[in-house]
Image (cartoon, rainbow, N blue to C red; front, side, top):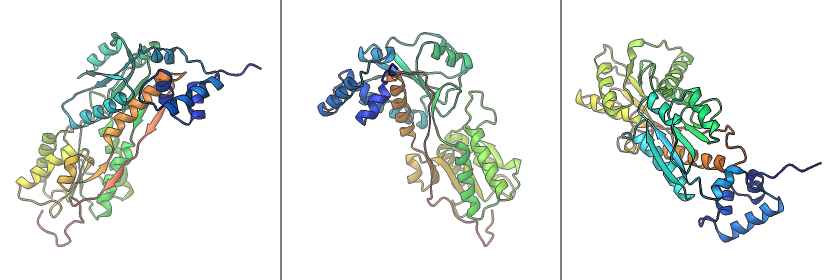
Length: 343
């Protein structure tokens, strides 16, 4: 019986390296030690490995770049993801092409048009795609990885946003809070940004598990911006009684919320506990309790994955990588005041 041809994954497994390293070694990239290159070449010869068309394009350097598609650049989140993508691509000798698509029509035009010559793969950050867009990438035999959103037929790098909402809310519940407000995004985001919906689901699940009835007036919109968080917190502080704790779906909204609290002459956490999400560098400065996620690593992980798919025998293979999140307790959360201080 004829033996099945060896794949780049077979070579990587036998040589105890990644598929991307195999590709890099076989195309003569300088960022591979001589010892590793010799081992990979020996294994490839022993297995009679023959690069497929996609890997051959890499070897000939006709696919030397990856397109990064983001909704915006004027946000810490997107710029940090981009830094992770660029770092991983640069280490492998690939260029980064950046596209900013502010609406669904712009995204559709990009997927419909020709990407720059030399583009071998695509990384999309919180970009909602139509089925036709995904099919077009497939017809081009171009691997794509989505960060944040999941699509049938496309690889993805994600976190469990339902768990994020549940973890943040449960922390406040465990401290003894029962009047817990939520600062989130739009209920139905026209850009297809699912984070708000998923984190709200986790918030509601945690309240239900604790026997707490959700209150509609405690849910306000912050649009994932600092100023949006500021406006949202002012709405909450106008309530009578106001909540004893607030879950902001991003640290940036939490920073705006902190300013609103301080302008009222109130104190966090004495008068109100506050938790965010992301573990933004300023969260440490502000002593903000938050849910940590390694955003730069999201970009680097997606970049490495798209390179592996570009070098693989099945560039359209669907893989899902879920990265972890952890609670980081700082001084912005505490039990509610047992003395019933004016709120």
